[in-house]
Length: 259
Image (cartoon, rainbow, N blue to C red; front, side, top):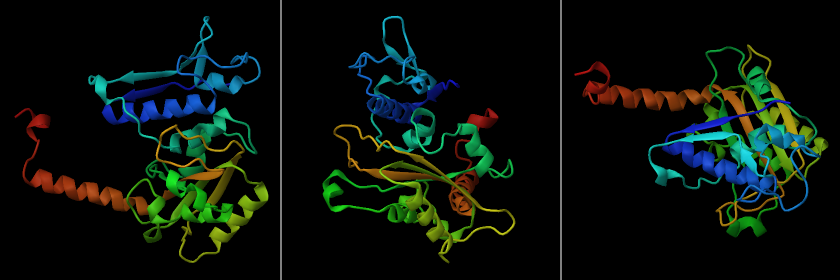
């Protein structure tokens, strides 16, 4: 069994890390003081917890993580289930259990194209929860829409190289296979012809957990997709353009050349 240690450095990473570990504790029923409400221990019937937590002699369950920041006030909540969905394959039972290294194997055919695009669906507010009853096919199709991308780019302007689809909640493999087969028939979704585009699906039967008081609704099913697509070049092009504008004015150059 592997052990995973997370290191969060800086304001943004500390904020996101705090939200992720709060969600992990809720998913595994760990209290804020590190205890569990039952007599269950990490080493008894749920060894998967040892990947992200360690049990002390006092019975406290401590996250395997390090937070580094000079500003103590930045530990705030950024509530999202993306990191939780990505690591769910390590922490919960399901149709398939994979290691994080397999993500790289499936998504990155060449070392230079190692920038995956992350998508999450459905993104539903708590007020709309009672009006949204989405099928497996609908939430899968939403992963290919620009509104569900975590990076501002239009996947319809690029071609997919590989996709890793992570399902959670109330669904069966038959519905997942039908949803992926439907995606492959759509002409608006293009795939590269120089590499066999692979869809790898993982199903975890535990429904997504939400942080109390958060903005996202408690849903029975959700999907997170990691994809390698050429559409990510739009984001890099914007950064390159902004760099050129700042460099033309010699902005902040003195920080790097000792002027």
